[in-house]
Length: 313
Image (cartoon, rainbow, N blue to C red; front, top):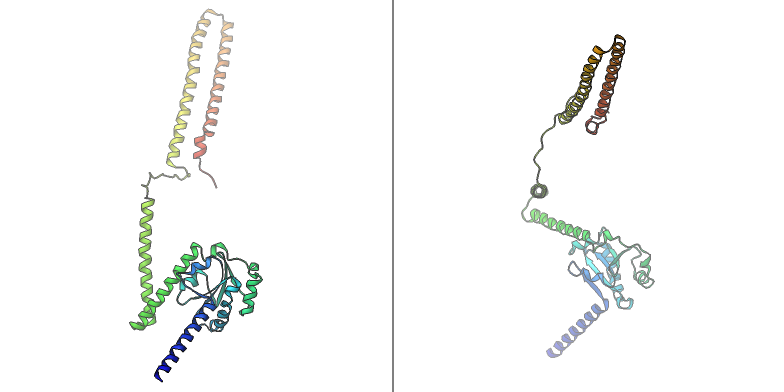
């Protein structure tokens, strides 16, 4: 009798194990997490993001399992992701509502927004209605670098949440005390990172020694500009002196010749020479005035003066 019971028990266990194995093989549902999610980048997939506490996810669970049993017939893979155990994937895919379903075809992501029943899922794949849905942009693609950074931030948030739970539940800190600890830690970390950043900037771009200060006059001109202007004026004055010296030397020689002519010439001729001398003097004075005007114009139109001249608003 005991032997028969033992045989019956072994037979029932064998039948149950075979049934469970066939059910699992038939379902074709793939559990994805942060370690193996790259599998969906190859081939065609339908992936559900769910949470065990979500009522809508609980209602969709048997429908999704039934749909997964047709994965071989449809030529696709059906997977699901538990966001409570894989918070990084919820950030990578920007899951803001549960359940969220994605269609993936050779690394191209599209979010499914249709009805949540098996027939709708199957027709969505068979009729290739996923081609009508807009692709997720490249900057928002879960496989991009920026979304990988977002995933790390989501992981960090879960770590901080677990630390908060430990501080409140195990160490008995009040909620505001836990927040105060996080605030102080944030300030210290921010100050440390800022100090490191300043040191890096000073190392890459060392500060330069300050140059000589410039003095600005009340007229709006710098001191160095006034020095250059005075040099230009001095040069112009030298040219004027040279120009004045030349006619004076010419006048002296002319005067000597005229004196000799006066001694040998008659009174009438002396008058004519005196008249000619006056004409030469007037002509020389006119030439001096013209040279002075040209010098003033050259001073005004000098490129250094134009460049240094203060702008009037």
